Image (cartoon, rainbow, N blue to C red):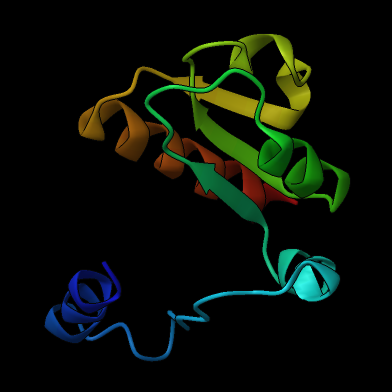
Length: 103
């Protein structure tokens, strides 16, 4: 998977915008989360997504698929839900970027 992501970074010349971290130990997770503005979760099946809660607690706007129990976890002002399709996820990412730009 790492190679596919690196290929996309190379193809689209995103070197200044993307940093691939790989494995992040639990005790360093907070330090990584607070770098961002948007947290993307593209799960296709999920009962309860702890990562979404951690990201929202760190102040990130969560963009996530509306599968399983995810819609019940966070209030609407903290999450943008979408169908689990690439087109729907992309549309919500654009929405999240617009919201982040207004902050």
